[in-house]
Each structure stands twice: as structure tokens, then as C-alpha cells.
Amino acid sequence: MKLKHIFITFFSLSVTVATAQSNLLNAKSPEGIGVKSAAQQLLDNDKPLDYGYVDDRDILYKNVIWEKIPLDERLNFPLYYPTNSEQVADYRRSLYKVFTDAIKDGTLENVYDDSNFRTKRTFKDIGATLVRVDTTDYGIEQYNAGEPVSPEYINRLEISAADVVEYRIKGVWYFDKRLGDLRYRLLGIAPVIPDVNTLDDEQPDLVELFWVFYPDARELLHNAKVFNGKNSAVPMSFDHLLNSRRFGSYLYGEENVQGDRKVNEYINNNALMQLLESDRIKEKIRDFEQDMWNY
Image (cartoon, rainbow, N blue to C red; front, side, top):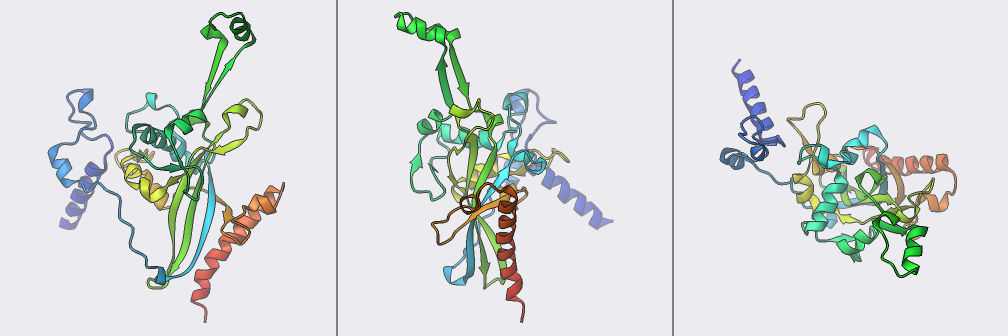
């Protein structure tokens, strides 16, 4: 009986600490919602779990891979929704909104143009790829006549969280000979959007908006919570969701001698064969661990 009471007390404490809408039941005004009490702040150990140090000499095998996380799969909805953050509580934001807000306010300083993390991008560079401004024929006539163009003749098209198609991630599978198991470490993540210039097309071109070096963004993603549909009192952080691989994905590339070419570069116009190749690479990685224990 005492053990039961201890468990209930511990569970209640865990729920209180993890609640995204802190002080919801005690707030005297809407401004008090989400404000943690002094006691809650003392109990919090609110930081991402540190990665363990891995010595290069302990890595017996590794393979860098690239994967796509399609956002039209139900399992991946927590990364996509809400597409309109104005209709929900302040703490509920999509992963795209978390990244773009952090880049805008300077919380996330380093973003890159590809998965090699060489060339940095600025918020100005990113903003230019999100907006398209077109002038109608009537507006062009006004401009040619030397008149100011009326606002109704200017069409502004802007990419939003609802337009994100998928996320691409880069990670490494490695076998730690000291621990004797196969492990995964996420290295980078990128939102993929339609090219704003082809957004009206039936099949718009897709572009990687920016790449984030994942270890650099862990603090940000730990503070951003994912809505838990089964129990909203216990949300999960984006950092936990991604590190624990609670998403559906398929592999589209691995490091190789041909300059890390992707699967669709050597298997063209055949989606089935591309998926089979993706599964073959996954099996090759998994089989390495199994083969280690075969005598």
C-alpha cells in the first residue's frame, strides 16, 4: 500500500513538472497561465539530457545516412501541427514555427545551406525564399503610366507552416565496441518547402529551406513541447521525439564513394525500386550488429 502511495506521489510530481501550461488551475488571470511558481522552478531540471562522450577509437563501424520524414503521415503530425499557432495556446507550435521564430529573434544563430554545414544562411536570405510578390496587368499599366501601383493590383504569396512538405534529417549509425551495441546520433535537420515561384504548379519543386546542426539546437527543441493527444498534461519535447526516433521516415541516401550520391540519382523514375534500395541499406546497417554476435 505504501509503495502505491509513493508511486502516485512520484507520478503526480512528474506530471506537475512536465506540464506545458504551468499554473493553469491556479492562475488568477490569463497572464498567469504558463508562469511557474518558485517551488516548480526549484524542482525543475529543465535541460536536455547530455550525450555521452564517444571516443573515436570506440567506433568499430559507422554509416552516415539521410532520411525524409513526410508530414502527410499520421505518425508525423506532431511535427507538422499546429499550422496556425494563433488558434491554440502559446506553447503549442509546429517545428517549422519553432525554427523560424528562433532564427528571427536570434536564439538560433547558425543555420546552413546544406547538410555539410559549411555555408551559413541569414534570416534575410531565408526570408527572400519565402515570399513572392507579383503585379497584375492593371498594376503594370499603372506603373508604365507613372502612377503609383494600387495595393489591390499587387499579389503577395508567402510560405507558411502549412506549406511544409517534409523534413530531411542527417544522422549516423555507429557501433560502439565499448558498449557493444549499435546506436544512432542525429546530426542535422532541414524543413523542405515548395519553391515559392512554383507554388501554383500542380507539382511544385521542393527546396531545403535551411539546415540546422542538431546539437546546436537541442536546448531550443527541449523547451518547445509537442502536444500529447493521449494526455495533454504530459507533453513531450521536440528533442525527445527526434532523439527517440518517434517518427516515420525512409532513407534516401548514404555516404558512398560516388560523392554521397542519393538513391534517386542512381535509380531514376522508379519509386518502388527506390524504396527497396532504401530498405536494403537499412538491413545492411542492422545486419552489422547481428553479425557481430555470430560465431
